Image 1 (cartoon, one colour):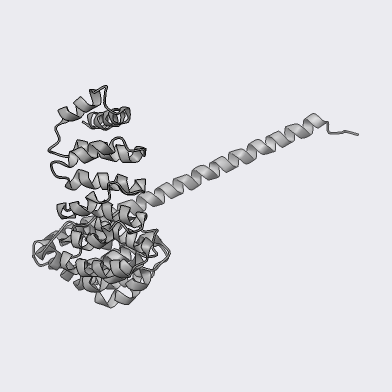
Image 2 (image 1 turned 45 degrees about the horizontal axis):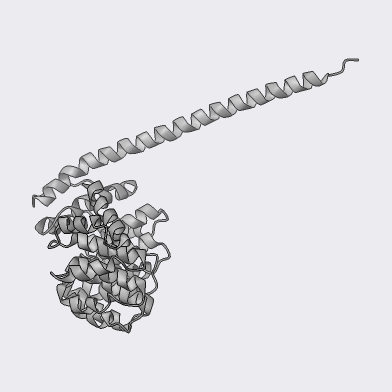
Length: 354
């Protein structure tokens, strides 16, 4: 009677494993080839759609009639809409009006309505941008709801769309949301508000500053430092009073851009909180006047490193302070060693960037 030895069993297992690995590799290659072929086919189709619609958009931008317009298949809606958005964002004035007219004529408003409720996040985002570009007032309520969505990207896109449709209504809503939407990057918010007319933003900013919570006020002040608002110093003046909380003072100082706030800033350079002193030094670097360099030089000996650093950077940035005077102080052996060290660092940073 024959018996299988352990080596025979091991050999069969090795053979079966090798065959299984070979089959899996073949299947993997087949799947990769299929996915690549499908992606290439999709890319070719998108290029064909782009080639068809590009001259149509060009004629519309130039104010010319398009004698024959093809129907947009449901699978091509996102491609055509994306191309329309691409052209719209680089145009102004009459060209935008012509593109909007064409969008409604070819039914892109209906395509947008369909994509707005799509499960695919990218297509929903495309629809939200298009609604703002088209200035579709019928979408207002849905955009307001979407601006409260948990997804930061979608909610921000909805906010931008609202601002483009009706700035007067959108600005107070978005400012209120700043109170609790700490997931919105302030640089993105600043870019959105830059699109709104200053005359629309300013009164709502003043109202929001008087009604928001401390954290909301700090975020609004951060926004104020990113956008251009006429007479911003009037908004900041009551917030630069020494009795205000340090975090609020620091935020207000970061937003300070006008020389008319200088008197308020000077009262804060000796504040007990080092964060406030550091921001006061930075503010003087933006709005300081001849004579303020003496105060900044004194701040080079502050116990807090950040205050010394901000003061050194402010001195370096003031146009009326010659570099030679800073180098003399840096090389003066009788000067405060902290002042010499921080000046050396601030001046070295400029040399590295040049």
